[in-house]
Image 1 (cartoon, rainbow, N blue to C red):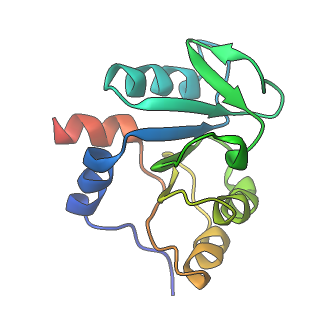
Image 2 (image 1 turned 45 degrees about the horizontal axis):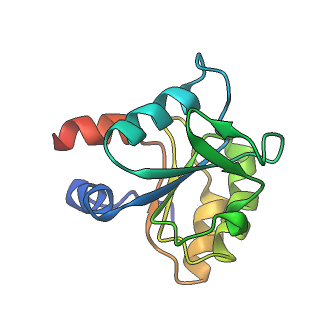
Amino acid sequence: MSFQNPSQEKIFQYLAEAKVIAVVGLSSNPAKTSYQIAEILKAHGYKLYGVNPKLAGQTINEIPVVENLAAVPEPIDIVDIFRRSEFLPGIAEEFLKTDAKVFWAQLGLRSEEAAKILQDQGRNDIVMDRCVKIELNKRA
């Protein structure tokens, strides 16, 4: 069975209920999509944490950066992922070690293996190949 995204209403619900978003693969380069999307999320009032082992301990555009998801110091509502699809299964494994609610892989990113890893553990709040910015704009 192949992975299916939740309904549009459910995606809007995730965004409406979320307060804390962890941005996996946050870049310090303002030209990168992860930096730009994080800026938009911040403007929408979300509390953000960057997850990037190379930049851990730094602050990027007022966003604290930690080494991994487990290092985020408060409950995560959405894990917004900006890493290539082949990294998604490993991120799914890391996600399972937290109480994070929604696993969200950005536009162009998809992994059946990651979906299976999560679903096998009863974690079914998964969005793949969707852009948070686009979904926020649809909701507005």
